[in-house]
Structure formats: structure tokens, C-alpha cells
Length: 509
Ligand SMILES: NC(=[NH2+])NCCC[C@H](N)C(=O)O
Image (cartoon, rainbow, N blue to C red; front, top):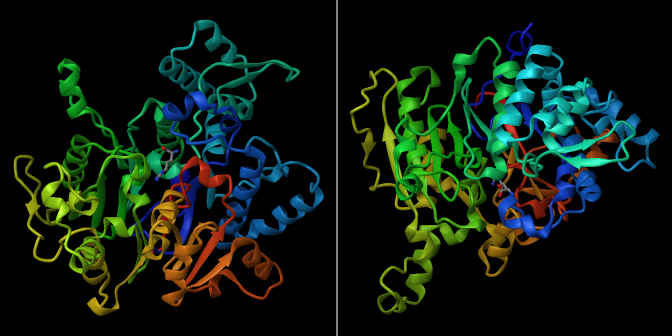
């Protein structure tokens, strides 16, 4: 039986409907191989203490299981208790027979292992990865000799090959240290999945592995629901400069299924204009995706804001968290207080960040037949003046909220330098477990003030889990809450809970 046949499978139509199933990846050994000389290329800003990162991440897993698959909890608690002295309990290791194996909280390495048990696919995947990574024939043969699927999956992800007695290690290819950010490898759009096409080589193998996982596991038998994006066929003939303009990369952190018929696409450091173009055409051409409205948000290209989900996320139908520097309202307010004459005097190309954000809306009713040559751009400038008014308009139009009830919570409570510091450590990158219950990082304390001022409870994950364990509270009873994960190490990889999750199933809202 295929995955689709045995489960009520895959469907996401908002960022805040109750989360029922997602794809994650636990920090693997490859993260422990990141060296300073590779920071830029591998998209890291620091080295990470892997053991501590795993402890932090396991709190996240437990939280997810409590909400999505509570039947696994007794097993996890028992396993943790038995192995307190072990660095990491076996039930958290995807390559261990004791792995918790949930069909709600799915894991990439675990799924890859399942596919690798099929001999024909095993050959195909090894060849695919080897061709991609350009490894020697000898290495390919060595990989073929690994008969244990779990071991092979680990090698294909970490790039580290051990010999039989585990004494000698060899790197067969680079690690993929950003694979924990499963958000970026694909986007569930209703019952379809848009496969990413990474902007940088450091993340390309992730996309390849995700393709295998999608075609041979998650969407097996329903491959028509997978959407792939690629460069146009004449791309290879373009000269170097033109290629820069027409490169087609899209990463999941830039795509949000924000409301049942509405998709947001960020054009950023990672997602290119030509990728947005291609996504718009593919989605409008396919009525089954259920998308009528596509809003494209152009943000500045820099590391601090690599994807739109580092700038804002949806918290509750009426509530958003946003980086104030990118809000036209906040920008205007500052200017009203003291007019910025320097803007006349500075270099001509100086544009304050919020003003450099551009928003475009494309609209095609489902009932209308798609015409490739038609321009679907619609003018929304009367109501959308910038990012903040866009978010407000989504609450009002897509979720039926009264204008006066929409709340915007700002990174660092909009006080410099906390706004920038906390945005950097993902104060705006929250994962909603349900409408009004979101997961973030414990270090972004100034941002908490905005949550509390708007009636939210802020609680450390450890405290919440204790309440669950003592039966003082159930996940169903948790409302209007920001749950915060320990983040000393996790945040160093530069992604938050939103990045560390790929929702596959949410309740309709
Ligand atoms: N959706 C996200 N914001 N993902 C964050 C990815 C972080 C990762 N280090 C990168 O630079 O690619």
C-alpha cells in the first residue's frame, strides 16, 4: 500500500490550521563537520555544538509528538529514562531500530531508509547521488556494498563513510548541514507539493533526496501532484550574465500557503524572479492546485533576511509577527516624527529597506481557463501599501477579521537594537501548531513583550511538557500561546521552528 492509501495523507491550505502531519530532519552528524572556512559556502555563521543542538531539537520533537502523535509519548519517555546517561537516547536516532517511527512526525532520513530497502531504487538513488556529487566509480561501488538501508541513508546525508569496525572515516561528499530546515525543500499547496530548486550548491543534494522521497514514498502513485520547477530549455545557451538574471531557484522559506486559495511567494536572495514567474504559470495552469491569488513580495537580498519567513509569519487569524524595519507603517511613523531630509541628500540609489519592498498580486479565478499569454497582474495599491498592510489585508479578506482587530507583533517589540538582534535569531520565524499556538526560540525575550501585551502566554517548552506529563494540561487546552524552545545552538544554524518544519497536513481553517 502506498503512503497516500494508508493515511489521510497530505493537504495544507493555511499556515495556522491545526497541524496534523509534518516532515522534519533531526540534526545529523554532517552538522558536526562544518568548519569556519566553509561558513559562507555552506550557509552557516558559526560552528555548532552538535550534542547540545540535539538536546534542544529533541525537546522540539517531544512537543510535536504531544500535539500530533501523543500515543508515542509513553514510549519516548520510557526510552529517555532508560538511557539518561547516553548522549542521545536511541528512540531519537532515525537510523536506530528503536526510532520512534511516527506517521505524523515524519523524518527525511527515516523515509529515505524505507525507500532504500527496495533494491531497484537503491541502485537508482546511489547512482543519482553519485552522478550529482561527481564521485568516483570506486566510491559508487563502495556505496553499493552497503546493504543496511539505514546505514546507507546516513552516508547519503552526512557524506561520511565509516569502515566496518567504525574506525576509519572517509568523506565521500560534503555534508548537507541545512537539511534540518525541511521547510526549504518543498511546499505543500493544498494536496500538491511544489519541489524546491535550491539557490546554492550547498543545498542541492537536499532537493535531490527530497525528490526521491516525494516520488517514491509520499506521492507514490500520485506523482501528478508534484510540481517541479526548472530553468527554461534555452537557459543553457545564455551567456553568463544572462544566466544570472534567468536562474530559476525557489526555496520553501519563500513560499507560504497563506489561505485556501492564496499563495505568497517571496523574491529574495534565494528565490529568483524567473522562479516566481514559472511558479505562477504552473499554478495557474493547473486548476487542481486550488490557487486563485498569488502575491509576490520582493524583499532586499541579504543574509539576515534570506527568505520571507525570516521577516514575518502568521500566528493567529488576526495576528502576525513582523520585522518592524520592513513595515511601511513603522517607517512612516518614524518619518512623521522627524522628517528625514538626509534622504534628499544621500546617494540617489539609497532606499530605506521597507520602501524597497515591492508587492505584486496576480489573480486568476478557478473557473477561468488559463491563457499563457494573458497578464494576470491586478492592482491592489489602494489597500496594500507595503508588507504590513498586506498582512492586514490577508486577515481581513481571507480570514474575515475586522480591520480594527488585526494585531501586528514586532520583532524585539520594535525597539532598536533588539528588533534586529532578535530577527537575526528568528523571532519572526514561528511554526503554528494551531491557530494562535506557535513555536519559537527562548532567546528572543524582547519579542515576548509584544506577545504578552496582546494576551498571549509565553512558556518554555520544558515547563509545558512537564504540565502535560503531570496531566495538569492537555495540548487541546493550550490556547493563544508562544511555546519557546531552548535555542543556544539551534539558532546558530540560522533558522527557527518555521524553517525546521515542512507541514504536510493541516486541518482546514
Ligand atoms: N526557511 C528558512 N528561513 N530557512 C533558513 C535556512 C538557514 C540555512 N542556514 C540557510 O542559510 O539556508
